Length: 366
Ligand SMILES: Nc1ncnc2c1ncn2[C@@H]1O[C@H](COP(=O)(O)OP(=O)(O)OP(=O)(O)O)[C@@H](O)[C@H]1O
Ligand SMILES: [Mg+2]
Image 1 (cartoon, rainbow, N blue to C red):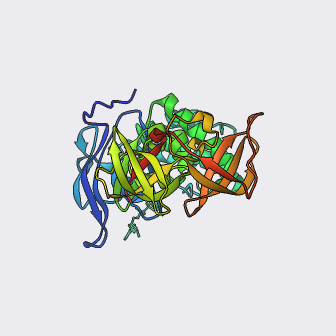
Image 2 (cartoon, helix red, strand yellow):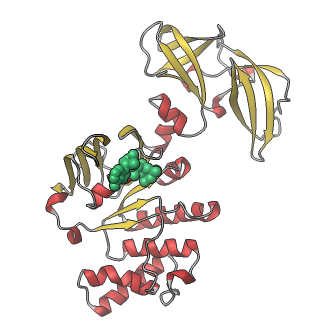
Image 3 (cartoon, rainbow, N blue to C red):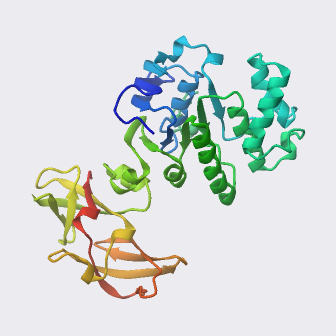
């Protein structure tokens, strides 16, 4: 289980900063404890500092300030071959002139492991990723997914306790990517290895991770398990970055009994959960998930505020219906409903009342 007691993790970043040019900090103040056996994902937009953090942990870059520890020991004091870190990159980085088996054998030779033990370990690692039959092929004779499996096996072959993966599935098509997400997660769980995984695909982050660190501008904006990240975003950035989100801008009119009344530019009043607003008159951006919007008034609490909405588009998606509405000047307001036998299909042009539970609508920073 993950140790969430706040004690020192297996990996710790302690006030880490990084500048490449001595001027601009691309990692600003990173504090992160990763537990042994945890699957932690760094998720964030391009340029937010994810790869830089991974490179510092792997020892390919040094921190400008702060300390990175592995098992309580500063990584500066651990020689690279004793770090026990496996790495998987987006472009596989397999040696093209070597066979699959030779690619896997290489890190073992570097570690001075004898031939028979090497062969056994290589076979075991290839079996683990269902590539046991492919040891004699060269990377060019494999599909993208197969190459990625070999890259994964190579990171696992010397029984690394910590595996770092930087967008390892970025080059694969959607179906294969989803399959590999499941497989990587399963192998990591079975072996009990600690994984630090980098992606800018939020679905990937949500489905694979024990915890996700959302990066922006060289800082962790929120660190939480996937369900908490999705359901309880603590800032507008995270609400917008994770999952689909509807945002409405307004001003706090009152805060009573844990419910904020927010006045939109149109004069409409809506109910929200005051997350990072505290004062009357404060600007806020409220955030509501498309599946939490209600247009069946029987399902709302007595006294709930409602809004008029014009239906702009109805999209049939099989398992769900996705309806785009105009709500208080926002033409991109999305409502998602389950395709149930009694579900209403809203028609473009119709004007409906919508509402929600105040607890599902978060008043965040504007
Ligand atoms: N070797 C380098 N020298 C100088 N600047 C660099 C170097 N590597 C990265 N940077 C800069 O540091 C910042 C963070 O880059 P980084 O590669 O860590 O981002 P990232 O979050 O991995 O982005 P992406 O999702 O695009 O891979 C960027 O502004 C980038 O231009
Ligand atoms: Mg990167």
